[in-house]
Image (cartoon, rainbow, N blue to C red; front, top):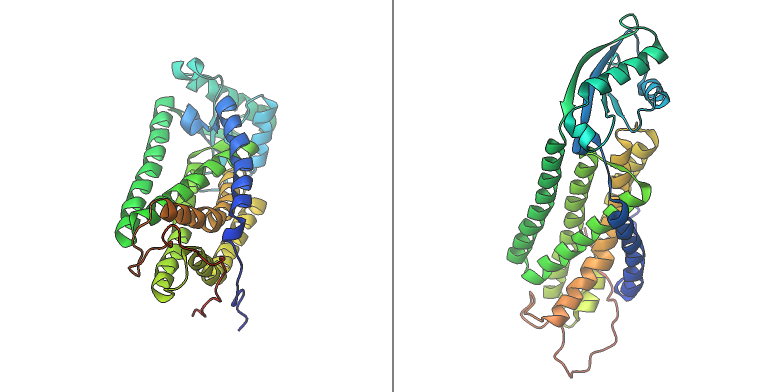
Length: 333
């Protein structure tokens, strides 16, 4: 069998400053745009009207979107609803106070008029089955719950890693994941993607994906700290990343192939999710190697503690240390 990167021996930690520069170049302009313009929230967060449409024959979401765009109803969310003849349209007319005051019937009438102009008179060609209001208050509650979900994931991760490893590992993993969230927000802002519940789900998935990859590397670090008592932490980190590199390449490569296929083939509803997930795989892999590992090295240097083999991870101050070198990785099964 061909095993990719079976004898990898790269000095990843050496390039940490270049990684910091790259991530700063992505995050800082993206957050500046976010602070100035905010995010483009979907109707689920801002409020609007949900309309279920039944057509006489399959017409596709593109036809409905074209009809609504021609009538000036922009940014509507359209998807099939279980059957090729049934569609759900989420749309709104007006913003802010206009939505709060209730424009459900006006929006339904505008959608009805747009469909009649494009498809022909109802009910021969279509009929509106139902329409309901989506309150902006519900959207704000969903935003709050999404933020709480991310916050509690951080707390649980920190506690888990503090128990399984030590608090330094947990802090490095949480800071690296926070980096992933910032880069993902910047990415969403650059592409001006609409933030819906699907996109929030992609961000939460990214948090779990990134933490999982970081924990795998840190678990190998802990094992190597016991095995190689003469190596310093710089060398142990490089060794551990190289040993887990084949697994990372195969896992992340196959997952990214799936999300790229979704980007190319999925419809308007799933494409934002696929774009965010594709970027999340990249940034999660990047942060596990170039952010989490160097952060652990910095934290251990700043607040040295007893490592897994009962000795200091860094040599005492004033003791000459050899030039960092990446040891030959041990074969893994």
